[in-house]
Image (cartoon, rainbow, N blue to C red; front, side, top):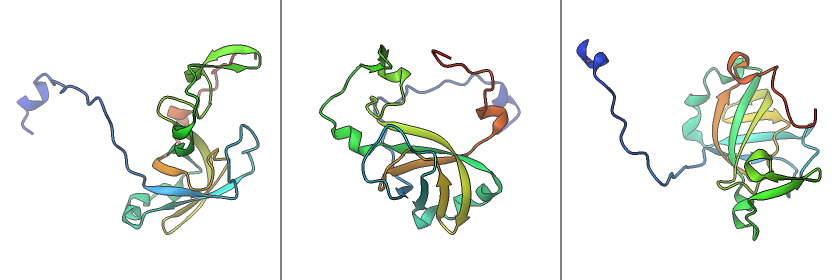
Amino acid sequence: MGLLDRFRKFERPDPPERVTLDAIGWVRNDVGKPRPHGWEEVESRIELLPEHAERLRGLDDYSHVLVVFYMDLAADAPEKPSTLHVEGVETGILATRSQLRPNHLGVAAVPLLGVEGTVLRVRGLDAIDGTPVLDLKPYLPHYDSHPDATIPGE
């Protein structure tokens, strides 16, 4: 990259209409079916494919990770609601943590208990056994924590 290249205007190509993602691993725990609550003490293993071993280098230096996962069972749900009733209030599906989202993606910030080879141990991940994991990122408090965040009714 030459000096002048840095000053040329970037022209973004048209974004894709469809996106295809591959699992990098799977969640393993004792939870066999979806549930709305009670995840706080669930310990899970995230078993990554062997080709991702080198990509884990340094992740064990962090106390928490962000896990991006695909709630595959929700994809076959007969109902695809636009809204849900949450504590008596009709709420848009994107304003909930429901698995019945348009793309069935889950994101969770969880404590990282350990890394052994290509297996991560975490606590509080709200994903059932066999859930495909799409990505992992270190939790960075200066980016990911928002102490002034608010939620309705509090």
